[in-house]
Length: 184
Image 1 (cartoon, rainbow, N blue to C red):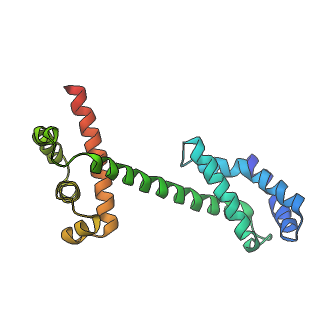
Image 2: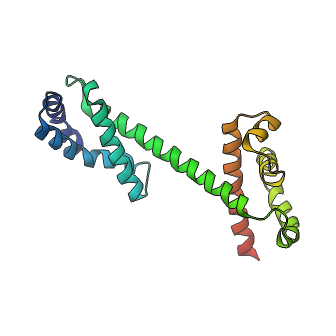
Image 3: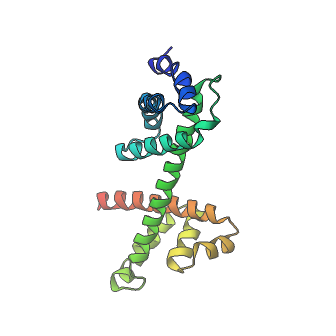
């Protein structure tokens, strides 16, 4: 039995007392849970600041749903499920932010500048390295300046599929660009 499992054996009694209104037991329980929650979150997230945010979100979620816990059942799986859900939410949110940053970075670039015209051959070479569906999405969104929704309709794909393809395409282009500059 792990140390966390041993410590968690006291948690159901503390939660039962907390559910009955014992604030001291509740504070003791939450403090005892933090190392276990941190260990669970750190398996999926490496950024310390984001880990701390997820721990706080997990503790808030536990607070909101504490009335649903049955003290006759093991508590660690209940806590782990909540921590896992908050971790997944954080990873999705981070992924969405990255997509927006990628899209904004491309939109800041002037569509028809002298530099853009000179770099057309290089861009074409980059795009040719992408899988067909990724290339079509990049061309639609960034070259023809269509919205993601228009691109989804045009390519007969869901909006989330278009976003995913665009995100992967941008990641692939960044990798190709880094490799190309290193060789130059």
